[in-house]
Each structure stands twice: as structure tokens, then as C-alpha cells.
Amino acid sequence: MRSPWVRLAAPFAVVALLLAIDLAGGTAIRIGGLMLAVPALCAVFLRPGQVLVLTVVTMGCVIVAAVNNHQFDATNFPIVISTEVLIGVGAVTASRIRVRREQQLAQARWVASVAQELLLRPLPGRLGPLTMASLYLAAEEEAEIGGDLYAAAVLDSGDARLLVGDVQGKGLGAVEVAGFLLAGFRRAARRRVELPDLPGYLDCRLREDLTDAEETAPPAPDGVRAAPRSGPRLLEGFVTAVVVDVTDDGSKLHVANCGHPPPLLLHDGMVRRLLPEVPALPLGLGDLGDERHDIDTYAMEAGDILLLYTDGVTEARNADGVFYPLAERLPAWSAEPPETLLHHLREDLMRHAASSLADDVALVAVQRPT
Image (cartoon, rainbow, N blue to C red; front, top):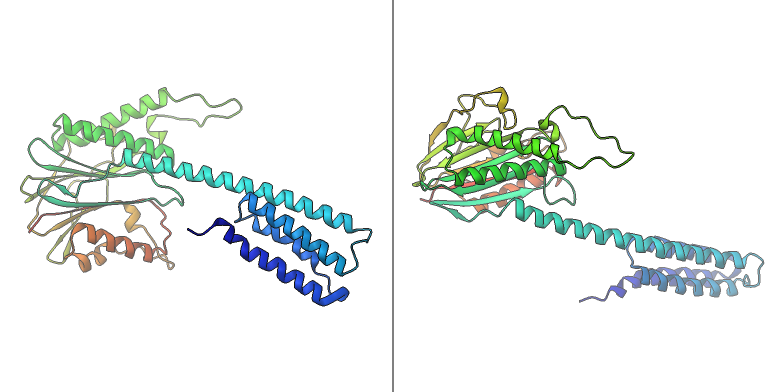
């Protein structure tokens, strides 16, 4: 393992080069003052102890340069040394603050990673007769989790149930709403809620949880004005979601779509959008619609792949503002298993968006074995 002190080699070389130029130029060239900038600039990547060592070495070089230029006895030389000391102290302090912030960021990312594992439990490689893979990409830089979600469960009937959703909004509020919905989904699987009743069940549980969260929210700190609310749904917003029940033999798909982008079914290199016959409201707005949900049924043949996704995929833009053409790209990987398909899809998506996503991305791919 390379020693962290190796990082000092380049700064030392710069200081030595400046000193050599100063000594070679005699009294005609005086660039010793440039050495003062080296510790300050290196505070952005060196640790405090390294900056301190560099400051001491630089101070020695400044004294050598002053003696060579006959400035050691000059009236302003104490000011030069005092300036070097102040710059050194400032550089060490800045380095300490930077290191502390880096440690805090690393801790926050670790906590976010743990939270993601608890909230978005890794999906198994197989679910009933299906081969499955999942992928989550957070749009926020340095973030590990956001408002997109997915989950899977095996029902008592042997059917596999899949969920993919997207919380309207961002930040910790969206994460909280996602947690509510995932808890409701798992509770519904245990309570054997039928698919036509599931959207209404999830909507009711979600609105109850949002109301409870509002009522138990801590008061705003003194001097901070709380944001006005006109109802529980303003906690973060509604949730678009799609739930798919796959029969125990994998031959049928029963889809309940709640305002979510339609799933894509890959069959013989062709892509079919599974559009709902009757549009439905997103979850969280159920008080405006019917409790029972219309279910669409589709055949799934051996080798077919079902892709569930959030709009962070289709709304990803390239430098020219062109949206990512998901349906057009998928046929190229239709012969691949779900895990490989998602790998290629991720690489292609990040190339299209130049590694800068505007929204979170959640993907679940399942395949009926041949």
C-alpha cells in the first residue's frame, strides 16, 4: 500500500524547483515569494500533518532564498516570515476542516447505504419460476437512495407479485413516503389482498401513514417558520406505481397500473408496451377515484422478459436534449438474461446522459425460463 506521505513528493518538487530558479537567478530574480502559495494550494488534497511539514520545509527554503538575495537582513523580511506562518496556519486549519467534512460525508454515505439496504431489500435472483434482476441509480451526486422503489413477494397462491413505484418529489420526505408504501405492499402480501383491491388498500394505508407522520412531526425550531400544509398529501406528494402478479407457471401477467410508465414486454426481439385500458390515479389520490382497480391481463411466453422501470430512464436526456429511447434500445439485449440486460441498459443509459441523471432510476427485469 502506498504511503500517504508520497503525496508530498510533488509539492516538495515544486518548492525545490522554485528555490533552484531563485538561487540560479541571483539578486536579479526573486521568486521566493511564490513558495508561500504552495502550502495554501496543497491544503485541498493533503492532510493537516502533511501541510504542516510542507509549511516548515517551505519556510526553510524562503530563508535560504532570502540569504541568497541578501534580503535576510532586510526590514521587511520579518513580514515575509510572518506571512508564511499565517499562510501555514491557515492551510493546516483548512486541511483539518476539509478532512473533517470528508469524514462526515463518508459517514453520511454509509448511513444512506445502510438505509437503502433496509428500505430497498435486494431482490432474489429467482422468484417462483422467474429469473429476476433489479437496479437502482440515485440521481443526486453522493446520494445512495431517493424516492424510487421496488419490491417483490411470493403469494400463498404461488404467484409472484412485483412492485415498482416513483414518489413525486425528492429528498428525505420522498424516502419516507417510499418506506410507507413498501411497508404497505409487504403487509398486503401477508394479508392476501387481491390485486384488484391492492391499489385501494395501498392508497388508504399510504394516506393514513402520511396523516400520522404529519400529526407526530416535531415542531419547527425556534426562529424557523414551518412550511404551511393543507393536507397530508403535501408531506411529499403522490406515488405512481405499477403492480404485476405473475401466475405460478409464469404464463400470465396481471397488471395494475396507477399512473406509472407502462411495463415493457420483450418477445422474440420485439417490445410491447403494456398500456392500461383504463387509466388510474396515482397512489395517494385515491379519495378522488374508485376503490377497486381495473386489471389488464397479458400472456407471457417462455423466454419473454418483463421490464418495470421509473421515468428517470425515459426522461434522461443527452447533450442535445433527446430523451433516452428505451423501447428502441431494448431489442439489442432481448436474448440476454435479466442481469446482463440491466447491465447493458445501465451502461447505455449513462453514456446517453453523460453520467448525469436528472431523476432517480429503478429497474426490475423478470424472465420466464425457456
